[in-house]
Length: 461
Image (cartoon, rainbow, N blue to C red; front, side, top):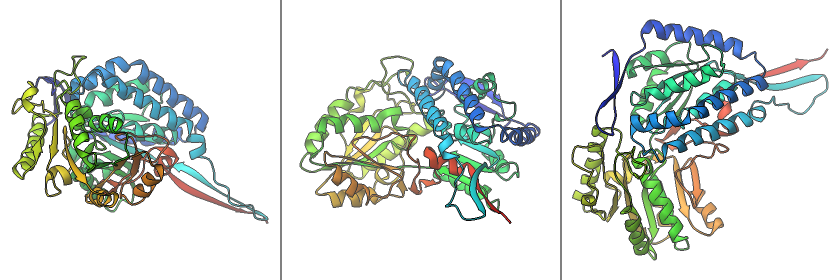
């Protein structure tokens, strides 16, 4: 197969075709990136920041067209996709603003006749492999800080969202970014493995599945390059008896169903104190039944299709497995007319009578399905939250900040929230544990992965 074909999940029509980048063009892109990076690294940081900021301006100027493109390619309702452009801008602006601090030299205590300091130097060329579910919000985490730090970037986007790569590179180029610094390629998984083995690649930033992360690790074996792998999630939330129940329901239902549940940090497991369990359930059902599952180009739609018919079938299989093992779905899918068997439109599901033998409670479902369990205590909630192969985010809903910190210190996760979920704060490190992967993006720590330390030890004679 020498071309990618993108099928819109909205109506199954062929949206576009693109030839895969040839081996010759990939080799040229890698050489060009290396040459451009050598010159870019010599540009003062303030100038790099100013130019990358202009690139962000160019993306913002194209927001309407890019938002519509995202909806057409992956199906998120058009009422929400502009938010991804705003998130792109917020993260980019933050990472640019903190660059002087993050990349500043480190000076140890002064010693007589010794000058000692540590510099942060760019690693070289960064390969960013971005997914379709948040095509800009995931890509920005590495692209902007990599460029600001003095690296060049090769972007490979999902075959479902190739226009996002093309539009980003076009915007950065229009803003005056030097040629070769930021390029995109369209490539198969096998080609990406070969690129990772190339001496021209110095760091890999990957967001995707555990299987994909394993393939990245295998491809990089023996190369000793840095890797940032943000993989799967099966994120839990715990609602304590003292929680603001209305806020908890509103936040968690949105956290489970936003983007049709296609979020690595979306909520898939909810544990509720048994004293308020039934009240929580009743409110969650009432709110879920207000969702509108329809064509995402309709501004009234709040729940769009999932990305592919194959994905929809896998979600239904996970749901069926839970039901066959005794779970109850409190939502009547018949109220959602678009949710037909075999289609990309999947009705939201609230499952009770679930247990951790069910896939929905121990594997990433990546659809609008959430399991809810009653718990008798904080300790039991902690045990269940930790009973997972993943650890990206976890949440607690409570009015007791001390309890939240106590619980959070015992939960195995990369980010712990109190009274919110499904969110990235660019000032904080974005990372995970267990099968969620390794590495850090965002915050000042995110710059460390995209640079290497170089120590200077100067002795005066």
